[in-house]
Image (cartoon, one colour):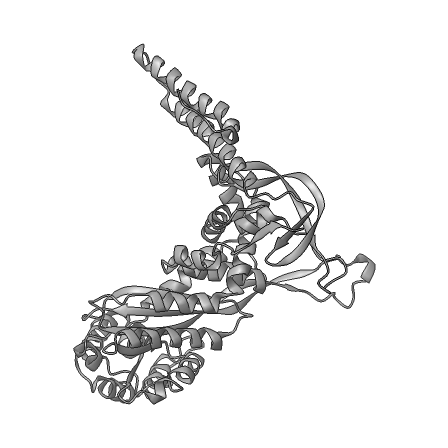
Length: 478
């Protein structure tokens, strides 16, 4: 005999259904006949979910308050509605709860201040009725796929069975809540991060990627206003920014990458400032780390990074040295195009292989290759609208201090910016550049930040900080 507290009576019928379902399947199995176990799996999951929902109803009812006047965080509130039923949307589905609503009084604030739901307040519910674990799970789904795919996944798995509109709405609510406090959260995350013992260097990279943006389109001058669509938009591609902070071992191999991004309407200076702050914290924990800036040849990227890594606190470190390198593979790409002009398509591959070997092993390789390019006499040869040899000469000349790959390899430093290149694809390309997609800068920023957390293995820690259990004191007032 199991004694059940009166408060849990609502769970008894659901628990009985679970046991009866299991017993029925057990008895069928004893007959020795064929079994459709997939049907049983679905049935038992539905019954257990019902138990879970009834459990939520009991737990949430325990958070409800019903008194004419209450003190909420030392502020007097008066009851305005009593025993109003609503559904709290849990991982297992809706759980119905009766609660009273209150309004603050006598504080000299707005004439009609918003009502307060003690249950939502005490649970930290997102948008009033979505418990934090449910909201976080929905946001995690949407940062991976579309809201319609998340809806289909929930229906198939039997958890989070909500509409695509709910997935969309809650994911952006979670994103907005995170962005509002992301600087403090990211600082806490990097302070708590433990540098792996095998780490010997840290690279910082920055790159750009196009993103489809929805923008208003002006009405054509020859189109009468009454015939024009009420809402004309256009899909245009704008440049977003990706950044990475990557720890490497003694061979220059990546160990762990922290990823950042911002939409075209975002602030790349702030992104670089955040990455510089990460490096400061990593150096505070492990001062022996070598620092490498790795980018392609775009002047904008270098200007953004240099602005942070030549300013405080880096300029105050007595022994601080930054190694600056143009991504090795961008250099090879330029040289390969020039080689095809100089020696033709057939002989280009051996020539590029020799240049690769020189760059990897000889500090003076840049000067040697530059001399060969100039001596070829093909600087003015055009291929379409390009002049590959001229472009390669310019590239090697402009980046004279950023191509000592041989020295970097001797020190065990990375020479390629593959981490940020991959981040452009995983952070933006896979999610934000699907066929036919278009984004607004504000809502796109929500997804970019959430996705960057997931790709950096920081999701759980970040969400725990963003949705801390609220500290709420509630008691009846005289």
